[in-house]
Image 1 (tube, rainbow, N blue to C red):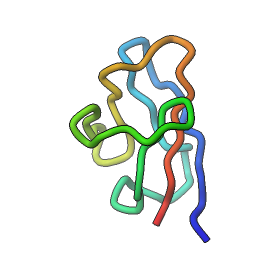
Image 2: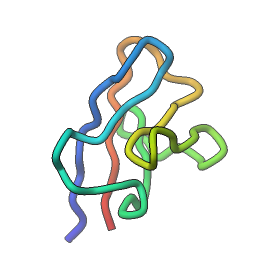
Image 3: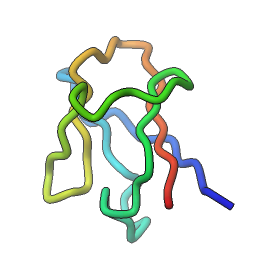
Image 4: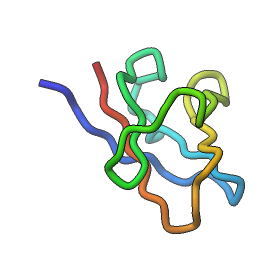
Length: 69
């Protein structure tokens, strides 16, 4: 069964990070979702040594989650 993790907003630019100490990197991510909808890989970039994601279209109230493999 896949695990869904809510990411934490890291800054005002739309960067969202995996929870500190979780032990995962984006190598374990199957899909990125914004407000419950899977977004295309060309709409985000993995940053911060593979532990955060920059969502290009993120809004202040966006909820970003990932599905782990």
